Image (tube, rainbow, N blue to C red; front, side, top):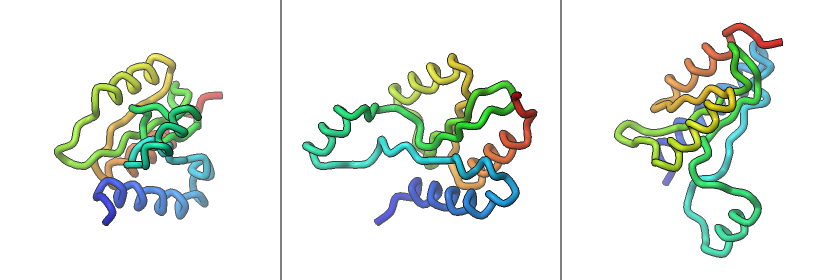
Length: 122
């Protein structure tokens, strides 16, 4: 059974595919697969390959509004970012990225639209 968070994120990715005609930059939106439960051996291999706890769920490597890129952490109501996630968010912001925590498809969609409509960095 899919988690509500995963369902909201899947809806966002489906919406982004649809909106690429209007905002071609959305083709660059991707999921960073750091979460989820894995077999112990697979988790060890992924960690050796560079997977790190706390990295946000989604990344849009597009410069807008004075930011280098946008990261989105998807959560469901009642969930809060973990200490490792908060640490990553702070480091990413210090490097000139925008980081948002979104609790629904609608919130994440609005974050993406606001970001893409902001002043482009040349």
